Image 1 (tube, each protein chain N blue to C red):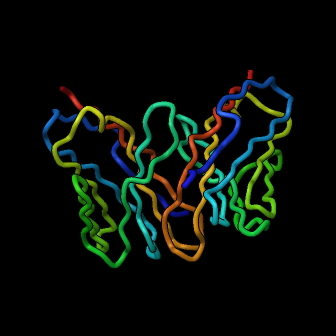
Image 2: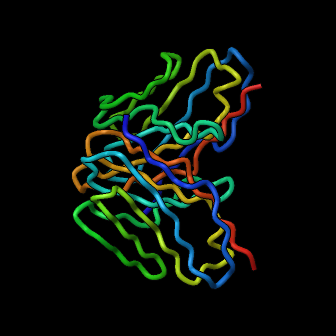
Length: 113
Length: 110
């Protein structure tokens, strides 16, 4: 069974640009969550999608957005990149209804220069 | 908001047992998880415990939960150098996002 796939693995962008990250969940998993990991702030929740609807949103500015497609794949977008957006972005999928087990992907390492 | 606290560092000798501790504030936790993160990698789910359990054993891993004190621990028996990583405790209340601790960096000395 394939795991959670995140693309790309690494990304370097310039301040002011925008970026789109992709996450393909485990087959059959309908919920996808996104987290930002930085050395200073640790793991912070960005948003969660279930059946193409945003269920929860973390405390991030409106430059951070996401969406989920009918095949459960999800994308997150960051516009007007800032140096502080440099982080590891992790996606997790979970089989809603089974109660446990957030499976994480390997992440996308974003560096803003 | 809800909070999860962990000590930042732990150093043990190869072959010894490691105990990583975590405290949480949420009264409505459903599941509590332990994740492992190796350098450059994502989070690997090691084990979990349901909130109505006191203990769970899975090979070298033992999870203890004291719900009254909101204290969770992960014991790794016969710790190996391959266990060197950062370990995260996470609190799952069901309909709200996971809340993670800052992680405990485990160093295993050969």
